[in-house]
Image (cartoon, rainbow over all chains, first blue to last red; front, side, top):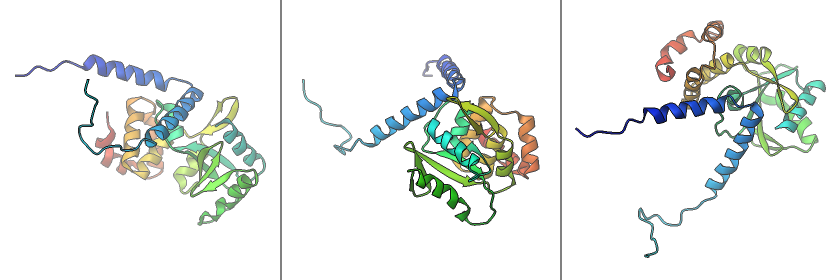
Length: 60
Length: 169
């Protein structure tokens, strides 16, 4: 039977990180939302340049 | 957001609105970790009563006179889309009435309590509402005793029980 890595420690750290974010001040959280909005706008501004599953890359 | 809140407070002083509270995602973020959201929901208690959305007209007039732009259901203040929602049932009326007063960047404002936010999300019942309810429960951000009382007062106990499997940690 194939063995997979135990990621419980990672999940636990993620949970801890989420709690530390929840404990931030309201002002800091709102600041983060504005940054998220900017990031969303930036991501949305991206356009498809190729429909190909394997984009062409320059050969070395 | 500071200027937005100042402007809303001025509307209360000017008598355009009777009372207000921040609801929706921004209010949820007050209690939870930040997540991306598009707008600021302001639930308002207006002085006039009526069943159509014309009761919001004085708010729009006040804001447009002060240079804000209205687009669709939003008014843009400081580039932030703000949606004004009149209290539309006994639950949202209570949520505004019992909202807690907080300070944001030295501006006093009002935010709905977590129990009311969860009850409103349950009542609304979209997938993203259920997801946020689970965030409240997982984060221990809601008092189950207070929530049960709110649910009972507004006839939502059965809906909670029927949907509990969706958000119970």
